Length: 418
Image 1 (cartoon, rainbow, N blue to C red):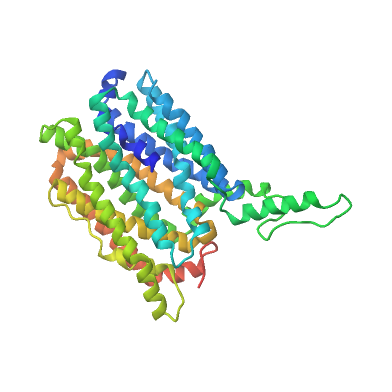
Image 2 (image 1 turned 180 degrees about the horizontal axis):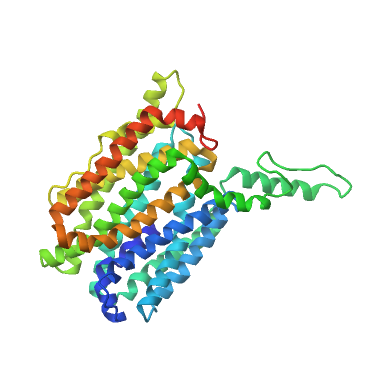
């Protein structure tokens, strides 16, 4: 959760950062948040495949150290260019747990209980960007904006120490490969037997590095399931960051509130996310069990999508609309994450990495469009158009996968077959 918190924590203080660094471009303030999200597009393309080769734990810790270093350096930036470069590199390291988390869930939870695990895991990248601006607003109003970066760095340093001591490896192929290496070392030199695992093609798995690095892009380009859900998930994610960068302007400029008070309105969005997460927790595994029983005890990933067809994106009034929007986003986001994990099983990490590429590119670009959109259309018309686009993308996607998802999976060279 700490990385998503960091992504948006600077948003309420963006005007102060721009003033202190001498940034005059109106795009600089939303870019402070968007550049961090842009790094989420490229980090998973590296960290997801590498976790398939070197293990989850080691790659997460290396990414976290990268995040920690450049998040500290952000507080020492002297120019707008330095700040944007450091923010991008911080996001690159911070994308590691987001890229690998889905794979860890596949490693540790059975298909019958995976929905509850995804509920907690997927809540972090949704709720984190909500918590960030609330904390950032009060930090910026009581001290310098530099402590927005340094406070999260202190928290991350504690996490890094704990992870170094207690975070264990979960990926079965890597664990078995380590065991095979130990067995090979124990064999006498005269013993010519080859000791490899069922996941390896040779004495080690390093020759597969290039192949693994290409998997996220390959899945995104070749898999219709990933393409359909990737586009929908990207739009949802873009909406999250568009709203996060717009909320301070709405309540400061329109309602003339202070930065600290305006930041409290993020709570409406956060409560909606939490409620949506709890709804997912209640229904994802339960609906799958019911539909599996009706299907002669044969489970299908499409059973994860039944609940999302009822999720809407209503836009009523600022706080109520944010709450209800948060519910819809959380339910859809978590159902899609679980569906991808169920569909791509052992390749869940690179599959989610491919979706993260598309998702983060939209999350980077959409907030940059918000100032011009709201200036010309206003908040009412602009948000109504966003809601209509969400329904136009979501409903056809979910219906297509509900009726044709099984056929698409059976034709896939990567997805789970029935």
